[in-house]
Amino acid sequence: MVLDKAKLLALKEDIETAKEEVSKLTGKKEHLMGQLKELYSCSTIKEAEAKVQEYAKKISKLDRQISEGTVELEEKYNINKNTDDSD
Image (cartoon, rainbow, N blue to C red; front, top):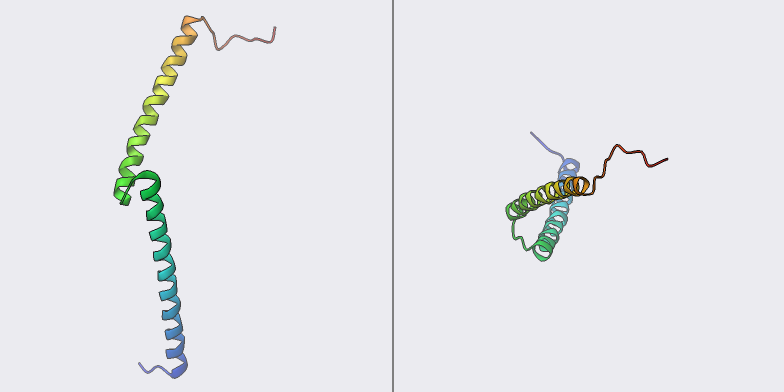
């Protein structure tokens, strides 16, 4: 396969563009990892995923407690959701 000068220059330009893009993405990754560390005390994506799972469980538990508390209050104060207050 013989490449002429124009094709070689085009390939060189493509390579340089790709290098620039890799450099930008590397910088963004470093910035985001810094934010992850600063805001959530996570050094890796794996740690962050574990923390997300932990928070999801806590949210689910709190949601269940709120629902149970709501039912308890409705029963305690004899509140009927089906009552029409428009009278």
